[in-house]
Image (cartoon, rainbow, N blue to C red; front, side, top):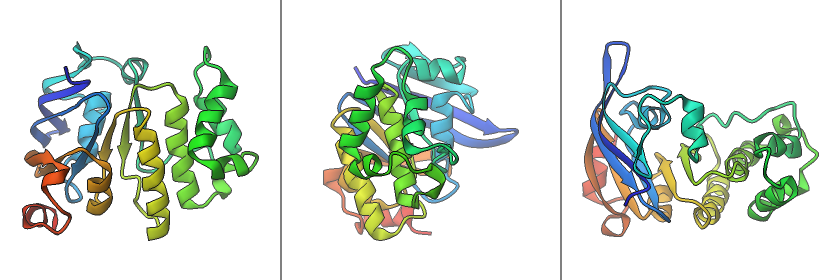
Length: 232
């Protein structure tokens, strides 16, 4: 059974119909990429899964349980973590304090922080530094690390490469590959090379609908199949 299943959801902002029957699934031990141009509904899909923008039609199930109608914190409590595109680290807290704030009360904080530092050694070097003074790439790593220490069973990662220099994108991609060894990922990403390198399967959104899907081994970033729907 798939870990996460999104079945024909329709989501709106006010009267604007954003998602028109979107379906996708993420299985155990999978990285699934959700790709598409700006404004086609990728982030809305994430928000609909989290019930921040609840779908008006369709179902979202996780381990067979319907999530539609739950509060967002209840979705989180089921084991789904979110790494938003704007990072949302606590700028005035240190790296270590940011991590401790994300660790569940009943977890071993030392062990949890060690998981983060094993995945992102640069964060251990900067554990006493305020998060707001980190580079953009380091803040992204901290945002991912906060999701990792949160004891989630799946992470939804929204545009992790946005605004980063190419070398930093490569570092973040390497870090996400390490994270994928621990938990399944649903990755929203416009960097097609990065998405295809990381993911096992992909979905392409256009105008609020899934217009293509398949195994990443079937396509390349410059294949006509993708460029037709991903080019501006």
